[in-house]
Image 1 (cartoon, helix red, strand yellow):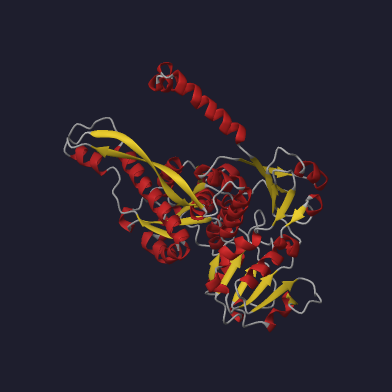
Image 2 (cartoon, helix red, strand yellow):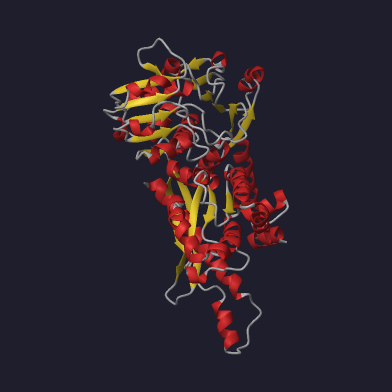
Length: 511
């Protein structure tokens, strides 16, 4: 019906020539649409297709897909003329070089290729945009004149070291598991010789999804506090958003940043090399404006285009897609009801941790605590939390005691925006709350309140009286129209949470 209505509104039978030329233009656009792909191994988690989808939305459309290949399949795919270019990720950045006709000076120097362009004459040219991507992540003001430790000596390490030299680093020390003959290398056991390091960069895959919760410095004799002059820690990993490496550095007082900016800007430079994105890095967004006449009546919407910074726009979009919204707070603060509505309004999957525990173990949290004790329950709660927090794009409602065990704190924060719903104690629901009944609300808040604030990225005050209008009308014996005022208030508050989360993400990128 909608399709027929749209055709009727267009009145195509009155504009045969317009209809013909519109179809002709659409067909030509689809024919001219170029095709690209990312080549790698085990890349189902790669964000590159989403990234290039964002670029295509604000520039000219092009297709982009994942190509999970074995090494013997590389040559056939690279020489396939259906593709106008490729991105290349681990472990094939060196393996693709024999199939290329030419390398740029930067790719030649690094002996690593992450972007391939097919020229009009069919020649294949290899580029390396990782250097540019890391330069955008690191920023000159953080690096110039500093001593830098680079953890790892693989392919990513070479590009990062070149970027650091370009940004004016005073000294660069590469750190390897095994002893190497180069004078600028040391082992992890020799890190205590460099307590004056001001910047530490992780170029290894340690801590990357799905092996979350690990750091390349785990098990080392040196501690973060031994680096007395530490200013900045950077990680080339972007999934999870906050690796254990970054959280440990932040705890030591360093400024930290994940590899998301590196991913975005190396992808942006690739699209510029292919000719799909302007060299300025700007796109155009079409917006519609409703104007009013002198009599106040609405006129037709006028469309205009505004410039879009593709790098920033891509980072905001990817971060909104990647991060979970994990809701914490006191028992009875409305976490489940509000989280469910936030999930509906953001198009995310909703996960109620208490319900998941009930599904897995066949009993509620209260039953488990009464039958086996609190420690037994907390262990299973932590295991369930790890299972879901490693994912992306969910709204997770947690139990009130999720912050009791400090080992849960990094799990909560690694890939989530943690929202603390702070509700006044006298408004908390107390029915079916075993810990509240055992200790009392005031004592429970004394134990947990500061932990909620420490873990949370965003604190939202929830002091509303949901369904108050319905209560007032019942008290006045007024006629109540057929509507659930309680749920209406919950939905309104969920919209407020949604706006606050979006604002927080935008501000974090703009900083």
